Length: 132
Image (cartoon, rainbow, N blue to C red):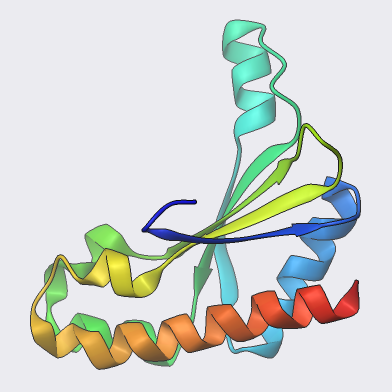
């Protein structure tokens, strides 16, 4: 368990988990700005098979705007990354960067924005666990 991430495990395959994660984040006002298919990239570049491993860049536009107004450099820490990866014991792990940990690197004025973002991500993760 890390100090910079929030993790749950869903008893489903990564494809279904991704669909559910996207919907849960959307319900909390987050959109997906980017996605990185690490599994495919490592397979193509290195011939390695690491199993399902995808990073979604989630953004809540009003919160991002607030953070950028406080500190324009905060973009280096945005968006909130959400990792979807196959769990070796079965199921799929969903790991989200904790906005409080990430934005603790910036000015104290970012804390309320980070708290709001964290509440949304925690609500999305809780909803996912409730779907199980």
